[in-house]
Length: 89
Image 1: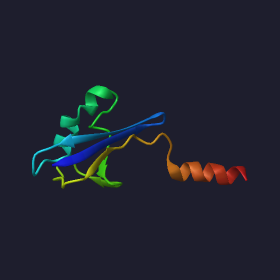
Image 2: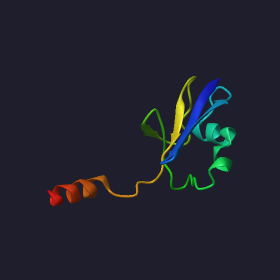
Image 3: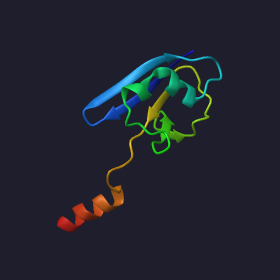
Image 4: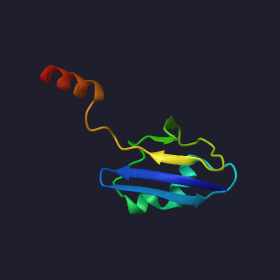
């Protein structure tokens, strides 16, 4: 079955289509995509993953057409950033 593996940096976005066996997990799709070789900064012990914007575990069984997204760690806490913007006003 076909699924996608996606990763984005500020200047680059990559979506790879991968053929995976039935009952494959998100972790399997990531490994088969080769994205870890292409972006060595991805650390799956730190980066979270999700399916279509919803965080999921690495052992999540995939369905046809799923898009596995690898998320980068946040640089700043969104709540703190909002507070800082509000304080400037």
